[in-house]
Image (cartoon, rainbow, N blue to C red):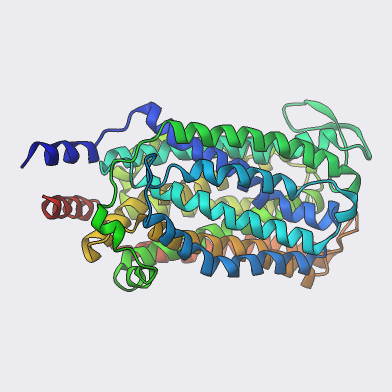
Length: 484
């Protein structure tokens, strides 16, 4: 084996340092800060502050996702066919990252003339989603380009999910609290649920809160832009396609991967289901707290509890995977999610709304299961890419990430649009301070029961995933022999 081959082999199995893992994870931090807020609060903002109809908002989410079906494969092919001095994937963090944060802030812009404007909301959201693909697909591909060392990949997944959930802490805990603190209408001293802490908070679902939403979100976007730059600065591509592989990339490779890469299809279905029930829950979370239990002022405290498992516990994921196995890991945490959802239903019952302790327990268990199951599945993407390279001879990392992005966005779409349509069917009143019994039932259905059913189906899907840890070792060995 020549010296160059030996050096390249060693570099591809590079043991990632903690600094490199954190540097890459800042990309997850940035995207969760930017797009997590969109997924968690844009629907609530659209329906209340921006006065766009429930069904109309649902169709906006759906139509944009349909366009993604055609857009994402083109992005994957375009990225895979090109390389620059800065790398194949890293440059896109800056090229598309700046437009991403600007477009995100525009969705909450408080311009009086465009309030309630469906064309403006649609155009900006469409542009945002197209640009997001130009960040997310290269970023996901970068994950498989840092190293082929399985243990480093597991640790990298843990680190990036810790940072992603730190962003979720800012999104689901502090964002609604900051916006309510800045909202001018109906201000009063309210118990936040933070161990007796009371803050002067206003009504953030009133149109007068438009400047509060924009101001807080703009600060979040600046933080997100800095995090993307850090990710760009502290990552290095080591496992990349050869010049010949790059030149031979075709759009039709997408169909070949779907045809011959069975693990990709199964993992994609798991992604779709996981993100569907996640965004079902995220879409109606604000509605649940505002209208079902009547404690929107607790959202910050409950969001803090929800963030704890995702920040503190991912460090144990590699060890838990060794104990329970890959499939057992997912079954364990999906079951925990279901238990947490059942406790959430108990909290929604009359007489239990003021039980903050129950809200804490239900949320903690639910989020521990959710963040573990939907977080660790990213560790499976590099092995699916390696499997595809072994079968086809092409390392189509961006195309495979585009396919995974499609599954993710289908889940995001279903989880964002269907709840809004269900709320419309159940008679949700966008301008009402109170909701009727049917609307309350619709919120509970979308927040609890549908996610439970989808979690059960996810357990069945992951059971048939075919790549074991031993298979990963064999795949890497065969790829080494081919490259030599």
